[in-house]
Amino acid sequence: MHRLFRRLAALAIAIGMSLSTSAQAVQCVTYAREQSGIALMGDAYTWWASAAGHYDRGQKPRSGAVVVFKKHGSMSHGHVAVISKVLSARKVLVDHANWAPHRARGRGQVTTQVVMVDVSPRNDWTQVRVWHEPSGELGQRVYPTYGFIYAKGRGEQARLQLAADIPAVMPGIDLGADDDADRTALPGLLTTAVASSVLPVEPGFAQ
Image 1 (spheres, rainbow, N blue to C red):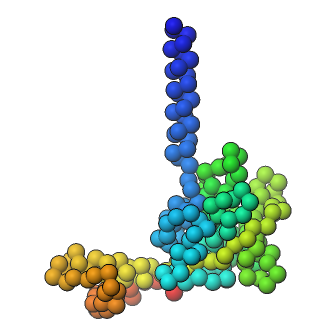
Image 2 (image 1 turned 180 degrees about the vertical axis):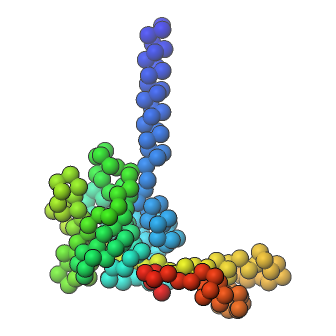
Image 3 (image 1 turned 135 degrees about the horizontal axis):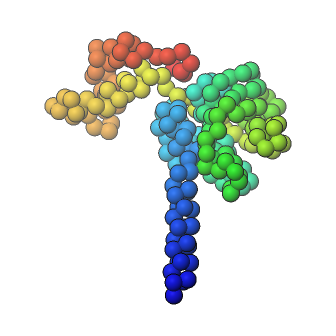
């Protein structure tokens, strides 16, 4: 009986450790959202379509932008990574999470300053190769991507936040879902102050 209890206790500990490890795993979308300020949800590959009308998109890398990988092979949810530095027209450094294969070392962890190279025929970053740490060289696999989503500058983020907060600080004003134009126009001088002097846009952020 005591032996059975010991085995059950060991099993419970093992399950607890497994759950703890899973809970601490960092997902690529969570990391990209926090690092870039791009407030999109859903699987990584859906970010490209979701960004339409909300964020600028393009085929040129910029620091702070998010590159969106398409679904490819076992990467059924796609992938997103944040551009940390542009080295050349065809080479950048990215920061991302959960890039390692399933059950491989590094799964669920953040890796930074990772080399990513454009290998597309037209230099439009629709095909890339990513540095493979175990081999110490670029991985042989070519990954298809949609392109880049560009983060808004801090001044723009502050303006949008201020517009969203107007009903709270000015209860007499009712801004419905269809009054986006009023949201951006109403703050007036306050919006200008926040966007241009309180929180100036930092170099490197896309406008």
